[in-house]
Length: 191
Image (cartoon, rainbow, N blue to C red; front, side, top):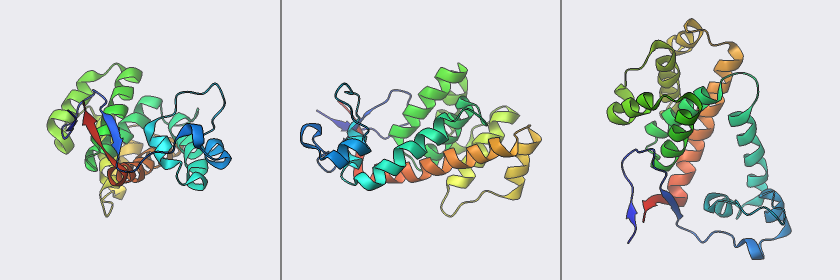
C-alpha cells in the first residue's frame, strides 16, 4: 500500500505522477531527443518521462537545470543544494527537499545542518555563512518573494561574490518553479 509523504526526510520517496508518463518504448523522436535518450541510456526518471509530454519545454529545461546546478564556477555544489533545499522547504516539496538535502550532505558531510532545517524549518539557526544562504533562498522562494537588499547584503558580508549570489538566485528560482511543477503533476509516496 502506498502512502503520501508529508514530512521532510533525507529518504527520497517515490514520486507518483497524476498523469501517465511517456512510454520510452513508444516515445516520439522529439520526445527521445528532449530526454537525450540514447540506446544505452536507462536512467530516465518518472519525472522526466512525465515532462516529456511537452518535449519542446523539456529540451530547454534539462540543459538549463544542468548549467544552474552543476556549473563549474561560482557557488559551491553544496551551497547550490542548500539553496534548492530552502526553496523546497518553503514550497513544501517533500520530494525535492529529500533529494537536495541528501546531495547537500553528500557534498558537505553536514548532516547536522539538514537535521536542524528539517526540525526547525524556516526558523532553523545555522552558522552565519549557511544562514545567509538559507535565508536568502527561503525569502526569494516565497510568493511574492520577500528577499530584500539586506538579504543580498548578508550574502556579500559572508564573502559571496556577485557570481555566487547569482548562482544562488538561479538555484533557488529553478526550484521555486520545479517544486510547483512537481506538486501539480504528482505526489511523493512511500511504498
